[in-house]
Image (cartoon, rainbow, N blue to C red; front, top):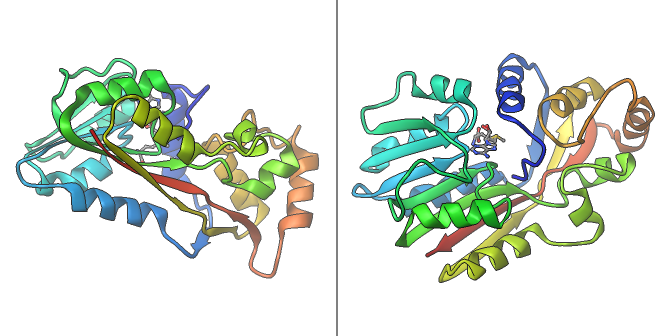
Length: 252
Ligand SMILES: C[S@@+](CC[C@H](N)C(=O)[O-])C[C@H]1O[C@@H](n2cnc3c(N)ncnc32)[C@H](O)[C@@H]1O
């Protein structure tokens, strides 16, 4: 995911907000995160060493640990790394570190994954991800697409990847081109765009407060836009929007 402007403390706060949240939302159609995990699982093997960039609380790495020889997670938020480290199996290791200067030697990993983290945010990040991946290794990532929450961003006239969205610049295309430029032999993208519902405006606000969907979101100064969202996007189920995700599978 594009994490521009976010900080380690932003993500730590976001994590605790999610834990406390009673937000009611659901998706109709494809389940991008499940498909991503399936692609990741299919690429793993008992002799392989895995890295998750932007691992957050480490749950994904922990759930994959029995499928690989060693599993590593790295995140720039020390508190999240502390949480991740608790109860980890002996073959699972977590480190605090910036994805632009990964604390690992070159060509160390057989597989690198990234679940809405910064691995392919720009060339600096992607070059570092490619550095630690072995020749012949594979990268699998899931990222937010430019059309995510498209109808909400249109009302706010701002939002995550808004510039790409209005200029019709494809995030999948950008990432594929970047990986090819960095010497990946193959790189392909799957785009998924399920419908997403929020039961009430309050549920949508809870999400906006914990993810960078609308930068600098403030429920008081953004009252006008929230009113329009409620009026224009509500149907018989709730507030209807979409969830655009890009799954990247690449081989070095
Ligand atoms: C949307 S969260 C995803 C967390 C986790 N992958 C998950 O799916 O639950 C993005 C994560 O990327 C981490 N992150 C953001 N910028 C980073 C950077 N420059 N280096 C390392 N991690 C970073 C954040 O701390 C956060 O945990």
